[in-house]
Length: 207
Image (tube, rainbow, N blue to C red; front, side, top):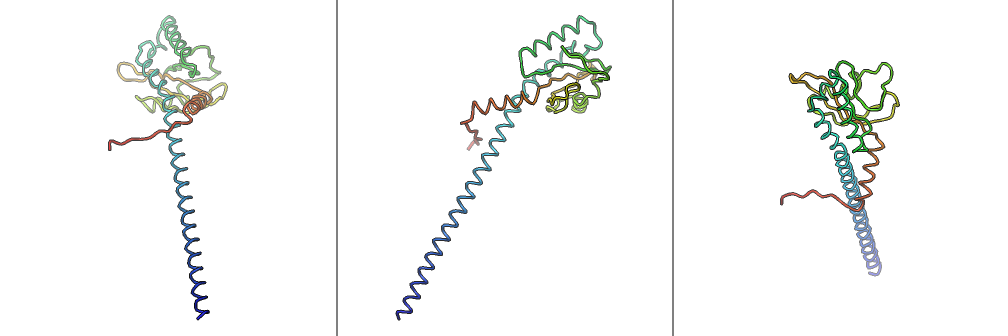
């Protein structure tokens, strides 16, 4: 009888220990999965926030080239006189002075002419074969999505937003482009994170 009670007691003790261990393991697994899901959600939200910051950074460039591409002097600059070209260059300079994120603002044309302030293209430079020009022609009539490429002379990494210039018949006369550096982009994103480092973004549905 004592032996039976001892075996029963041991069985109960082992069962209780097994249950406690099982519950503990399940709790740990559940806690781990909860933390993992929370980490994934945080990373996803952080990436989405960064993507929105980058979109916002480039949005002003799209507005600028959309405005400039509708100016007749910009569309036909390669075929105009020095006075008209000087007016366009002055406009480009004013925009660059107003926005320090603009590294270069220029327009290249089908005849190989380049209209730009304070820059001498290297020997053999042809705007029509540059990545920003080709991308704009392929995206016609829409602007390109901020393509990265190496600058012709300095080889620095830049992001270019470009758009075709069209005549009254819809033919391409050239391409206008705005360039910003990767340092400028990273600086803008870093400032945004610093400003809103304790903020979170949520999506709310109607219900």
